[in-house]
Length: 317
Length: 263
Image 1 (cartoon, rainbow over the protein chains, first blue to last red):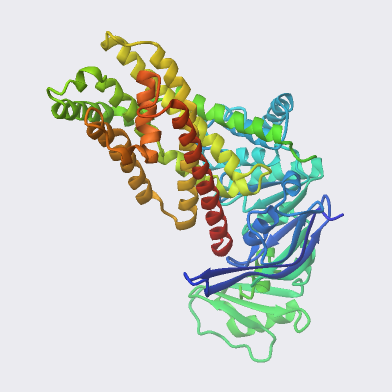
Image 2 (cartoon, chains in turn brown, cyan):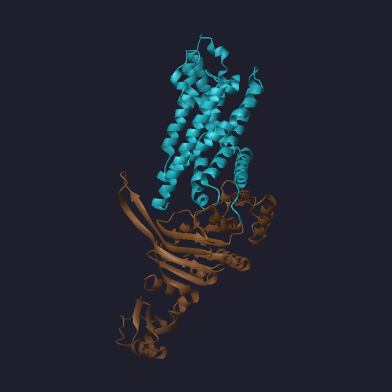
């Protein structure tokens, strides 16, 4: 049985006038089908407005699909049975009660999911230790910093031992050390508990460090679905050359060499080429012939995951 | 994990209500700050009453200061802005939980309203005990009896407002109309126009009278004004059933709004 499954999931937002006629419609998700196996960690990524968050909200039962189906652990999304199986953490929306202490919020959430008093206390103590929450338990949700709040949001999401964790940009707005700490927590926690993770994020670091699989969505459709490492290797035949200049030059066009000018500023030029068309030494020789002593520095690199993703999203780096 | 039973859901609701109530009682500063205007209303309305009833004899029989203290306490506790905002913020998270937003909202609203009524009502009792030689402690017991009814009504009304807020992004204008309606027709004008002047029957038929005037009157005299206490309670039950229907309709509006706009 799949931990997460969608079949032709389609969601269209329709604004109607007072007569009930549709005056505006936006297709947010266009027939997405995918499965995530139990224990798998998958990134669900795409540009803003691609339909990632809508898909997660459809899976969590917040939204109802216009067509198609979404299920969690074999239960149709939106049912209490499905709600018992997953936890939801979002960088955009807090599930804590801002005027209550973190402990009270966790207790209430535990009670909503049917944990008995003793279980709740044990679970809160465990999570407080694992997520280093001891110092915040007695503080009100509204008084926490973003980093502190996200740790507490994590605790709230996993309070009831969910089998699936849906994480919608959990590192949004966090500083680098806090982001890294939260990633470590998520990684340690998913690997030790075997929890399935479906993560949306614009942060490539989240994807690289947390997800073995990547689903890339564009304009409401899945355009890539495979191991995260494959995403990079598909672009591994591309090389980029950055040249730092001693003095400004006219944009040199190196005819028929296989080098493609990507960007140019007063002190830097960037080219790209495919290894299928040109070897690295021939590329460098061609550039030296053209620019010679004006080159201050030269670096050859393969594209980063971020650049690979940008290509898939239809951008040039 | 199995689906939580109704009893477990009820336990979660009780816990939510208990924490809200405890929060109100432990941190009364915001309520007390809002109560700064209460004496102004009470003094103004008492002066107005005494002016209108000069020489009529009714003022001597009616404990007007206590009455206005109770009505203003009820008015000051109803449709709390923070309570509405809290439900609005909790709308989406609640939809992904195994306990409905409506159940969470009623529990939260009940606890909050009960907490406010107990804090302000408690202070009113202390004030009356210290200043009014004729004060009877039974009044405090009657107040404790009406607090759950008023808190439940307020929780349902708060849900109506919160649902409308989620749907249209604003409910403050309506909140203003309702609270001022309560003030004018339930806690202010009715007794001024009614008591000692033969009463204005149609005003007594309004929910404002049942939710503000009658509870205050009940606390003072131990029975409803102009009708059997049972009839008043039945009327309260009917109004609350209507409020519950309105809250359900408001939730459906909010939910369908989220489905077409995405929030």
